[in-house]
Amino acid sequence: MRKQLIAVTLMCGALLSLAACGNYSIPDSAPPPSQSVAANPFEEAEDEAGFLAMLTHEVASANFSESGERLPFSYDGGEFRLDYRFSLTGKMDTVGFLLFLDGQPQPYKVDEPTAEYEYCHSFPAGEDQSFSFLFEPVTGSAGDTLALTVVSITNPDFQPDMESTSSYGWYHKTLDSRVELQFNADAPAAHSDLPPVREIFSQSEAREEKVTAQYVENELPKYGWGGVSMDTLDSGIYYTFSCDGGIIYDNLRVSAPVTLRFTMCGTAGTSYSIAFFLDHQPVKLDETTSCSVILSKGGVMELEAVIDPDKLERFNTFYCVAVPQGGTSAPFFKTNSILLYKEN
Image (cartoon, rainbow, N blue to C red; front, side, top):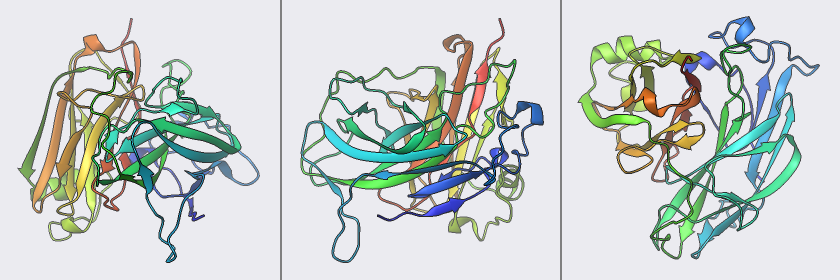
Protein backbone atom coordinates (compact mmCIF):
# COMPACT_ATOMS: atom_id res chain seq x y z
CA MET A 1 0.00 0.00 0.00
CA ARG A 2 1.20 3.46 -0.75
CA LYS A 3 1.81 5.74 2.17
CA GLN A 4 3.48 9.06 2.62
CA LEU A 5 4.92 10.30 5.91
CA ILE A 6 4.53 13.97 6.67
CA ALA A 7 6.09 15.59 9.73
CA VAL A 8 4.92 19.16 10.02
CA THR A 9 4.29 21.97 12.42
CA LEU A 10 0.58 22.68 12.27
CA MET A 11 0.10 26.43 12.36
CA CYS A 12 -3.30 27.54 13.61
CA GLY A 13 -2.74 31.07 12.38
CA ALA A 14 -1.98 30.14 8.79
CA LEU A 15 -5.46 28.83 7.91
CA LEU A 16 -3.92 25.88 6.06
CA SER A 17 -4.77 22.19 5.85
CA LEU A 18 -2.48 19.27 5.11
CA ALA A 19 -3.10 17.39 1.88
CA ALA A 20 -1.78 13.83 1.69
CA CYS A 21 -2.81 10.24 1.24
CA GLY A 22 -1.11 8.71 4.20
CA ASN A 23 0.24 9.74 7.58
CA TYR A 24 1.14 12.76 9.60
CA SER A 25 2.83 13.46 12.87
CA ILE A 26 1.79 16.35 15.08
CA PRO A 27 4.92 17.79 16.69
CA ASP A 28 4.79 18.77 20.31
CA SER A 29 7.67 21.23 20.41
CA ALA A 30 5.91 24.59 20.00
CA PRO A 31 2.36 25.89 20.39
CA PRO A 32 0.62 27.65 17.51
CA PRO A 33 1.68 31.29 17.38
CA SER A 34 -1.92 32.53 17.39
CA GLN A 35 -2.72 30.95 20.77
CA SER A 36 -1.77 32.11 24.23
CA VAL A 37 -0.21 29.50 26.51
CA ALA A 38 -3.29 29.41 28.73
CA ALA A 39 -5.56 28.79 25.75
CA ASN A 40 -3.59 25.85 24.33
CA PRO A 41 -5.24 22.59 25.43
CA PHE A 42 -1.96 20.75 24.80
CA GLU A 43 0.29 22.98 26.87
CA GLU A 44 1.23 20.08 29.18
CA ALA A 45 1.58 17.49 26.41
CA GLU A 46 5.12 16.20 26.02
CA ASP A 47 6.59 12.83 25.23
CA GLU A 48 10.03 11.42 24.59
CA ALA A 49 9.58 11.32 20.82
CA GLY A 50 8.63 14.99 20.69
CA PHE A 51 5.35 14.27 18.90
CA LEU A 52 1.86 14.85 20.15
CA ALA A 53 0.24 12.17 17.99
CA MET A 54 0.63 10.02 14.89
CA LEU A 55 -2.29 9.46 12.52
CA THR A 56 -2.61 7.26 9.44
CA HIS A 57 -5.73 6.42 7.44
CA GLU A 58 -6.40 4.71 4.12
CA VAL A 59 -8.69 2.27 2.32
CA ALA A 60 -8.35 -1.24 3.71
CA SER A 61 -7.92 -2.83 0.29
CA ALA A 62 -7.19 -1.19 -3.03
CA ASN A 63 -6.82 -2.65 -6.51
CA PHE A 64 -3.87 -1.65 -8.66
CA SER A 65 -3.23 -2.05 -12.36
CA GLU A 66 -0.16 -3.86 -13.70
CA SER A 67 1.53 -0.48 -14.07
CA GLY A 68 0.92 0.33 -10.39
CA GLU A 69 -1.96 2.79 -10.80
CA ARG A 70 -4.76 2.56 -8.26
CA LEU A 71 -8.01 1.48 -9.90
CA PRO A 72 -11.37 3.08 -9.06
CA PHE A 73 -13.97 1.29 -6.94
CA SER A 74 -17.16 0.28 -8.71
CA TYR A 75 -20.58 1.61 -7.73
CA ASP A 76 -23.33 -0.72 -8.95
CA GLY A 77 -26.34 0.86 -7.24
CA GLY A 78 -27.87 0.85 -3.78
CA GLU A 79 -25.71 1.42 -0.73
CA PHE A 80 -21.96 1.49 -1.34
CA ARG A 81 -19.52 -0.03 1.19
CA LEU A 82 -15.91 1.13 1.52
CA ASP A 83 -13.70 -0.75 3.96
CA TYR A 84 -11.35 1.63 5.74
CA ARG A 85 -8.73 1.68 8.48
CA PHE A 86 -6.86 4.14 10.64
CA SER A 87 -4.30 4.27 13.41
CA LEU A 88 -4.14 7.11 15.94
CA THR A 89 -1.56 7.01 18.70
CA GLY A 90 -0.26 9.58 21.15
CA LYS A 91 -2.08 12.29 23.04
CA MET A 92 -5.30 12.39 21.00
CA ASP A 93 -8.58 10.93 22.23
CA THR A 94 -10.64 10.60 19.06
CA VAL A 95 -10.63 11.08 15.32
CA GLY A 96 -13.62 11.88 13.12
CA PHE A 97 -14.17 11.51 9.39
CA LEU A 98 -15.95 13.68 6.85
CA LEU A 99 -16.74 12.44 3.33
CA PHE A 100 -17.09 14.51 0.17
CA LEU A 101 -18.25 13.03 -3.14
CA ASP A 102 -17.14 15.21 -6.03
CA GLY A 103 -16.76 17.93 -3.41
CA GLN A 104 -20.28 17.63 -1.98
CA PRO A 105 -20.77 16.67 1.70
CA GLN A 106 -21.63 12.97 1.81
CA PRO A 107 -23.40 11.54 4.90
CA TYR A 108 -22.61 7.94 5.78
CA LYS A 109 -23.25 5.08 8.16
CA VAL A 110 -20.63 3.01 9.96
CA ASP A 111 -20.52 -0.79 9.57
CA GLU A 112 -24.25 -1.59 9.77
CA PRO A 113 -26.99 -0.76 7.22
CA THR A 114 -29.37 -0.11 10.14
CA ALA A 115 -27.09 2.57 11.64
CA GLU A 116 -27.86 6.28 11.48
CA TYR A 117 -26.61 8.50 8.68
CA GLU A 118 -24.32 11.27 9.95
CA TYR A 119 -21.91 13.69 8.33
CA CYS A 120 -19.18 13.12 10.92
CA HIS A 121 -18.62 10.00 13.00
CA SER A 122 -16.12 9.99 15.87
CA PHE A 123 -13.87 7.02 16.71
CA PRO A 124 -11.73 6.43 19.82
CA ALA A 125 -7.98 6.51 19.27
CA GLY A 126 -6.19 3.22 18.78
CA GLU A 127 -3.83 1.28 16.57
CA ASP A 128 -4.96 -0.69 13.50
CA GLN A 129 -8.65 0.22 13.69
CA SER A 130 -10.93 -1.03 10.90
CA PHE A 131 -14.49 -0.11 9.93
CA SER A 132 -16.67 0.44 6.86
CA PHE A 133 -18.25 3.53 5.35
CA LEU A 134 -21.75 2.84 4.00
CA PHE A 135 -23.60 5.41 1.93
CA GLU A 136 -25.90 6.10 -0.98
CA PRO A 137 -24.09 8.59 -3.24
CA VAL A 138 -25.49 12.13 -3.18
CA THR A 139 -24.45 12.61 -6.81
CA GLY A 140 -23.26 10.61 -9.82
CA SER A 141 -24.61 9.06 -13.02
CA ALA A 142 -23.77 5.87 -14.86
CA GLY A 143 -20.52 6.44 -16.76
CA ASP A 144 -19.12 8.97 -14.26
CA THR A 145 -15.88 8.52 -12.35
CA LEU A 146 -15.94 10.78 -9.30
CA ALA A 147 -13.48 11.46 -6.50
CA LEU A 148 -14.42 10.53 -2.95
CA THR A 149 -12.43 12.67 -0.52
CA VAL A 150 -12.02 11.21 2.98
CA VAL A 151 -11.03 13.85 5.54
CA SER A 152 -9.94 13.03 9.08
CA ILE A 153 -10.41 15.62 11.82
CA THR A 154 -8.62 15.24 15.14
CA ASN A 155 -10.66 15.29 18.38
CA PRO A 156 -13.84 16.53 16.67
CA ASP A 157 -15.85 16.35 19.91
CA PHE A 158 -13.71 19.00 21.58
CA GLN A 159 -15.25 22.47 21.95
CA PRO A 160 -14.00 25.38 24.10
CA ASP A 161 -16.25 26.37 27.01
CA MET A 162 -14.91 29.95 27.36
CA GLU A 163 -13.95 29.17 30.95
CA SER A 164 -11.13 26.63 31.02
CA THR A 165 -10.41 26.94 27.27
CA SER A 166 -11.08 29.54 24.60
CA SER A 167 -9.52 27.98 21.49
CA TYR A 168 -9.15 24.66 19.68
CA GLY A 169 -5.35 24.50 19.96
CA TRP A 170 -4.04 21.45 18.08
CA TYR A 171 -7.52 19.95 17.71
CA HIS A 172 -9.61 19.87 14.51
CA LYS A 173 -6.62 19.47 12.19
CA THR A 174 -7.23 17.55 8.98
CA LEU A 175 -5.62 15.02 6.69
CA ASP A 176 -7.31 14.05 3.43
CA SER A 177 -7.14 11.03 1.17
CA ARG A 178 -8.91 10.44 -2.15
CA VAL A 179 -10.22 7.43 -4.00
CA GLU A 180 -12.30 7.21 -7.16
CA LEU A 181 -15.77 5.74 -7.67
CA GLN A 182 -16.69 4.45 -11.11
CA PHE A 183 -20.47 4.62 -11.54
CA ASN A 184 -22.05 1.67 -13.31
CA ALA A 185 -25.47 2.87 -12.11
CA ASP A 186 -27.07 6.20 -11.28
CA ALA A 187 -27.02 7.51 -7.73
CA PRO A 188 -30.46 7.36 -6.06
CA ALA A 189 -32.73 10.21 -7.13
CA ALA A 190 -33.99 10.75 -3.58
CA HIS A 191 -32.75 10.06 -0.06
CA SER A 192 -35.31 9.76 2.72
CA ASP A 193 -33.17 9.14 5.81
CA LEU A 194 -30.41 11.73 5.54
CA PRO A 195 -29.55 13.88 8.57
CA PRO A 196 -30.96 17.41 8.61
CA VAL A 197 -28.91 20.26 7.19
CA ARG A 198 -28.34 23.25 9.46
CA GLU A 199 -29.90 26.57 8.44
CA ILE A 200 -28.16 29.60 9.96
CA PHE A 201 -27.81 32.07 7.09
CA SER A 202 -30.22 34.90 6.46
CA GLN A 203 -28.66 35.42 3.04
CA SER A 204 -25.78 34.17 0.89
CA GLU A 205 -24.30 35.17 -2.45
CA ALA A 206 -21.52 33.91 -4.72
CA ARG A 207 -19.92 36.16 -7.32
CA GLU A 208 -16.73 36.67 -9.30
CA GLU A 209 -14.73 39.90 -9.28
CA LYS A 210 -11.61 41.03 -11.08
CA VAL A 211 -8.50 40.39 -9.02
CA THR A 212 -6.70 43.60 -8.07
CA ALA A 213 -3.12 44.44 -7.12
CA GLN A 214 -4.40 45.56 -3.71
CA TYR A 215 -5.94 42.11 -3.10
CA VAL A 216 -2.78 40.26 -4.17
CA GLU A 217 -0.20 42.52 -2.54
CA ASN A 218 -2.05 43.52 0.65
CA GLU A 219 -4.88 41.13 1.46
CA LEU A 220 -3.37 37.74 0.56
CA PRO A 221 -0.27 38.27 2.78
CA LYS A 222 -2.55 38.91 5.78
CA TYR A 223 -3.77 35.32 5.39
CA GLY A 224 -0.33 33.74 5.02
CA TRP A 225 0.07 33.96 1.25
CA GLY A 226 3.24 36.01 0.99
CA GLY A 227 5.36 36.36 -2.14
CA VAL A 228 2.43 36.16 -4.57
CA SER A 229 2.31 38.64 -7.47
CA MET A 230 -0.07 39.29 -10.33
CA ASP A 231 2.38 37.46 -12.59
CA THR A 232 2.57 34.31 -10.40
CA LEU A 233 -1.07 34.19 -9.30
CA ASP A 234 -1.97 31.45 -11.78
CA SER A 235 0.66 29.04 -10.42
CA GLY A 236 -1.13 28.23 -7.14
CA ILE A 237 -4.43 28.26 -5.22
CA TYR A 238 -5.06 30.95 -2.59
CA TYR A 239 -7.95 31.77 -0.29
CA THR A 240 -9.03 34.08 2.51
CA PHE A 241 -11.73 33.78 5.16
CA SER A 242 -12.98 36.63 7.34
CA CYS A 243 -15.76 37.31 9.84
CA ASP A 244 -17.10 40.86 9.83
CA GLY A 245 -13.98 41.92 7.94
CA GLY A 246 -11.45 40.44 10.37
CA ILE A 247 -9.41 37.25 10.83
CA ILE A 248 -10.75 35.15 13.72
CA TYR A 249 -8.45 32.40 15.02
CA ASP A 250 -10.21 31.23 18.15
CA ASN A 251 -13.69 32.48 19.07
CA LEU A 252 -16.27 35.12 18.24
CA ARG A 253 -19.05 36.42 20.45
CA VAL A 254 -22.20 36.68 18.35
CA SER A 255 -24.75 39.30 19.41
CA ALA A 256 -25.70 40.62 15.96
CA PRO A 257 -25.65 39.31 12.37
CA VAL A 258 -22.15 38.22 11.29
CA THR A 259 -21.00 38.60 7.68
CA LEU A 260 -18.69 35.83 6.45
CA ARG A 261 -16.51 36.30 3.38
CA PHE A 262 -14.63 33.49 1.67
CA THR A 263 -12.50 34.31 -1.37
CA MET A 264 -10.46 32.06 -3.66
CA CYS A 265 -8.27 32.66 -6.68
CA GLY A 266 -5.43 31.03 -8.57
CA THR A 267 -4.87 28.44 -11.28
CA ALA A 268 -7.46 28.98 -14.00
CA GLY A 269 -9.86 26.11 -14.64
CA THR A 270 -9.52 24.58 -11.16
CA SER A 271 -12.92 23.55 -9.77
CA TYR A 272 -13.81 23.63 -6.07
CA SER A 273 -16.82 22.97 -3.89
CA ILE A 274 -17.13 25.36 -0.93
CA ALA A 275 -19.12 24.35 2.16
CA PHE A 276 -19.66 25.81 5.63
CA PHE A 277 -19.95 23.50 8.64
CA LEU A 278 -21.59 24.07 12.01
CA ASP A 279 -20.84 21.41 14.64
CA HIS A 280 -19.56 19.18 11.81
CA GLN A 281 -22.82 19.40 9.86
CA PRO A 282 -23.03 21.26 6.54
CA VAL A 283 -24.91 24.54 6.50
CA LYS A 284 -27.57 25.14 3.88
CA LEU A 285 -26.58 27.43 0.99
CA ASP A 286 -29.72 28.29 -0.96
CA GLU A 287 -31.09 24.79 -1.64
CA THR A 288 -27.81 22.86 -1.43
CA THR A 289 -25.01 22.09 1.03
CA SER A 290 -22.16 23.49 -1.07
CA CYS A 291 -21.28 26.04 -3.74
CA SER A 292 -19.32 24.98 -6.83
CA VAL A 293 -16.87 27.44 -8.38
CA ILE A 294 -14.39 27.36 -11.26
CA LEU A 295 -11.40 29.65 -10.91
CA SER A 296 -10.66 31.92 -13.86
CA LYS A 297 -7.54 33.79 -14.93
CA GLY A 298 -7.60 37.29 -13.51
CA GLY A 299 -10.66 36.61 -11.36
CA VAL A 300 -11.35 36.08 -7.67
CA MET A 301 -14.36 34.10 -6.46
CA GLU A 302 -16.21 35.63 -3.50
CA LEU A 303 -18.77 33.85 -1.33
CA GLU A 304 -20.56 35.97 1.27
CA ALA A 305 -23.10 34.79 3.83
CA VAL A 306 -24.74 36.41 6.84
CA ILE A 307 -25.26 34.44 10.04
CA ASP A 308 -28.56 34.98 11.85
CA PRO A 309 -27.68 34.85 15.58
CA ASP A 310 -31.20 33.70 16.45
CA LYS A 311 -30.44 30.42 14.63
CA LEU A 312 -27.38 29.63 16.74
CA GLU A 313 -27.15 27.79 20.02
CA ARG A 314 -25.01 29.07 22.89
CA PHE A 315 -21.83 27.31 21.67
CA ASN A 316 -21.18 26.35 18.05
CA THR A 317 -18.10 25.05 16.23
CA PHE A 318 -17.78 26.68 12.81
CA TYR A 319 -15.43 26.29 9.85
CA CYS A 320 -15.31 26.34 6.06
CA VAL A 321 -13.91 23.74 3.67
CA ALA A 322 -12.85 23.92 0.03
CA VAL A 323 -12.86 20.52 -1.70
CA PRO A 324 -11.41 19.93 -5.20
CA GLN A 325 -13.83 18.75 -7.86
CA GLY A 326 -13.48 17.10 -11.24
CA GLY A 327 -10.59 14.77 -10.44
CA THR A 328 -8.08 17.59 -10.00
CA SER A 329 -5.03 17.14 -7.79
CA ALA A 330 -5.56 20.55 -6.19
CA PRO A 331 -5.26 20.72 -2.38
CA PHE A 332 -8.06 20.39 0.16
CA PHE A 333 -8.47 23.33 2.55
CA LYS A 334 -10.15 23.74 5.93
CA THR A 335 -10.16 27.01 7.84
CA ASN A 336 -9.42 27.09 11.56
CA SER A 337 -12.34 25.96 13.68
CA ILE A 338 -13.72 28.94 15.55
CA LEU A 339 -16.20 29.02 18.42
CA LEU A 340 -19.33 31.08 17.81
CA TYR A 341 -20.81 31.75 21.21
CA LYS A 342 -23.61 33.78 22.73
CA GLU A 343 -23.55 35.13 26.25
CA ASN A 344 -26.42 34.44 28.63
